[in-house]
Structures are given as C-alpha cells and as structure tokens.
Image: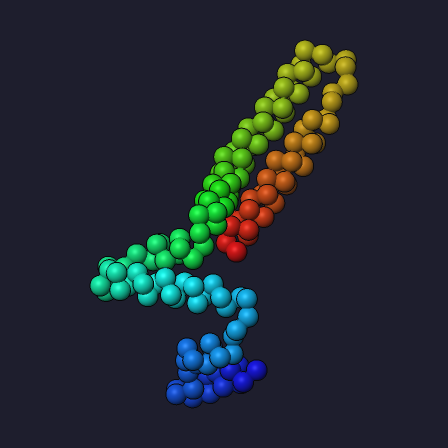
Length: 140
C-alpha cells in the first residue's frame, strides 16, 4: 500500500495519525480507537501523562472478562512453566526408583516400562509443549 511505499525514504516521510486513521477503518483498529479515547480521558483526569494510569485505560478497553482471562492465562503459563515441569520430573524419577526397587526385590519377574514411557511422553515432552502453547496464547 501507499504507507509502506513511503516509509523510510526520507526524514520527513513519517506516518502520522491521520494517515493511519483514514487507511485503517477495520475491526482490528477499533480497540486502538477505544484505548486512545480512554487514555485521553485518563490523562485529562490525572492532569498529566506522568500521573495517568495506563492500567485503567487498558482495563476499560479490555473489560472485566478480558482481564480475568489474561490473569488466568498468566497463572496457567507460570504454573506450566515452573511447577508442572518440576512435579513431572519428580514423578518420572520416582517411577524409575520404584522400578529399580521392584527389580531388586523381584529379579525373576519382568519389569513394566509402560509407566516410565508414558511419563516421558507426558512430562518430558508434553509439559514444555504445554508451556509453549500457554505462553504463546498469553502473549496474543
């Protein structure tokens, strides 16, 4: 488009707000207009930009439901990134110790490797994938 063609050619070829507004009137631009309106209200209410709270403008733009979803996603991301991986590794290592103990006390019986194999798939491979998915979703 014409904005991309002009961008960066010289020092006075800067995209200003009026160009963006006249060229972007789709549903993806409406949150920006709402946020800009709430931010300007917050700046007027506070008296200056330094005293204004950006979190209030964001809360008014996203709403209660959106903020709750953001908090839940952040908690799930932190849980899957730290607690879930450590807990999974602990379970996996405990099952290996149990398998070793079983082998010591029952040397003639066949060991069951299904449980450690499933734990490898779930905790060693699945936990980082779950963490990556939640971190991608929470940053959208």
